[in-house]
Length: 210
Image (tube, rainbow, N blue to C red; front, side):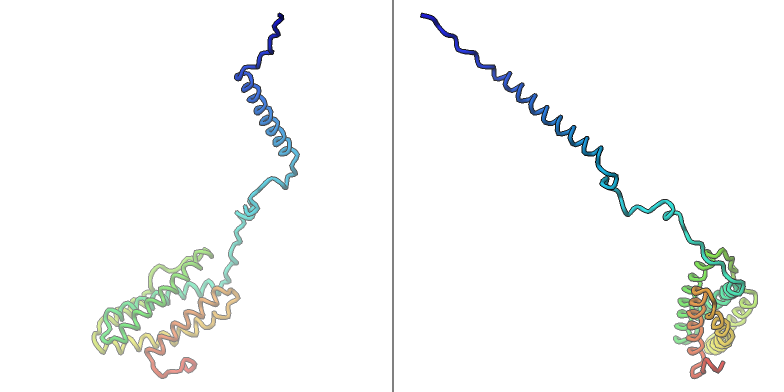
């Protein structure tokens, strides 16, 4: 009786190897398709940072307009006036006999410190040098006031501030018509501060009648 041998089944290991090779071929084929697609994409399809500024846009800084001679002279003189106003305010806040004078002094310091900071910023942008200290004339005014105490100080201080404001307000008002909008706005703001001081030291006095 003749025996027929059954065909041998492939081993499980060989089957797994074939399956593994098939997976590798599929992965390689997918990678190749992806790389080909990337090579033929149009330039606009590549993601870019659309908000990144151009080099010229990053370095292009508009230079400030040059100040006219009248505006430059005005800012230098304004710096001298503002320093004197701050010094007067500090003296009143420390030496004033009555609360209204002390409070006015503090308010003067606050208003003119802001004006001085604004003025320094303009000077830096325009390459303008400002006087570092108050003038000798203003130092003499302060030294004169320091000799007095009590109500006498308050009276002389009010008189000195009112007198100064009547001269300084027209000076600032004139530059509100400057062609430079920043200078004009600074002049108008400082003029308002001086008008406030005049009203506090000379009640009932009309500014237009100075």
